[in-house]
Length: 206
Image 1 (tube, one colour):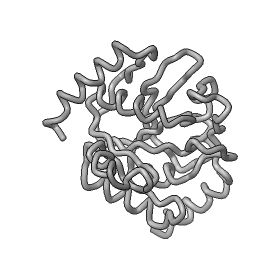
Image 2: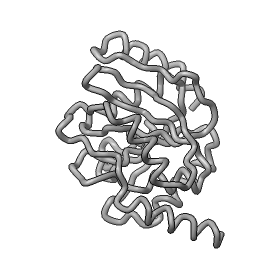
Image 3: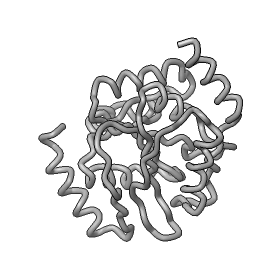
């Protein structure tokens, strides 16, 4: 991965010079492994912006993608770009797989898109469990069509107080619109109080 970083960084710099989008770099820059949220995720074009953000920051990025993206003839390319295939119809074990990946590569920035491009009532909670189980900080990456900016926002530590943590996340994304704003999903989990109670019970048993 390290041998590819100078090339990827140069590609990213060229992209941002030519792109109508403006890059917002992380201030201050965080180091070490992290979970990187990509939101609002409303278009497949977000993928290019995500790579350009990560490569500019020289992050060894790994990202979760639906398994259909990894079929021939492009599956090898997707894996070379850091992709981890996910079967959305059979998500069992996903959290454990991603936690194992984070532990194998202590430098990795693992990108998740908890809202997805399909319209839904809220975010999936997998990112929250992954961050807690792997003890990873969470960086709030964003795409904002209103200001035509994309980049990395603050890095936070989740506390297990799900409603309070999600309030912080909601506050950051409140004024962010995706490439297709009509597909934007509110950063809200299905049962935040219930999830907090289940997590507290699991941690007390563990």
